Amino acid sequence: MAKKCVECEKEVTNYIPLYKRGTICGDEEDYSKRVICNHCLKISEDYAYCCCCGNDGAYSIKDLLTDEYNWYCKEHISESILETEEEDNWLNYLDYINDPSH
Ligand SMILES: [Zn+2]
Ligand SMILES: [Zn+2]
Image 1 (cartoon, rainbow, N blue to C red):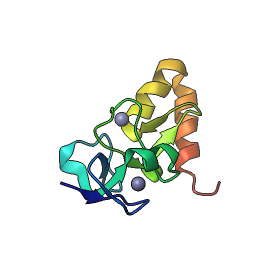
Image 2 (cartoon, helix red, strand yellow; image 1 turned 135 degrees about the horizontal axis):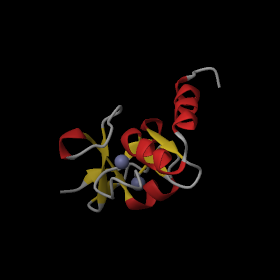
Image 3 (cartoon, helix red, strand yellow; image 1 turned 30 degrees about the horizontal axis):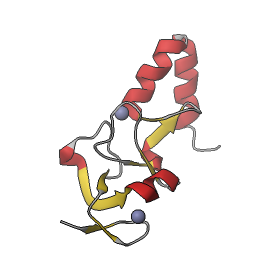
Image 4 (cartoon, rainbow, N blue to C red; image 1 turned 180 degrees about the horizontal axis):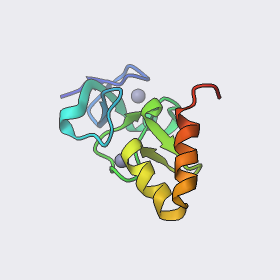
């Protein structure tokens, strides 16, 4: 069934479900009613995949964090950072991302 892409508002059959805002490591139960088409997702500055969760659904960029190379959901950024950084750095990073003043 065709749905309307949130970005281009065209009817699309080849769409990616968007997770609800605030979703961490989403699955089918976290899909919002909204969808985005492949083309818009590629160029979108508002939605992206978590590079660990796969391509089943796209997150609002506000629910993702980046290591400058890839987007991660909040669950997967911790795994990604912990693999490469000392725990102190991770705690500093947490302080940094939780600080609303930047
Ligand atoms: Zn579109
Ligand atoms: Zn993820």
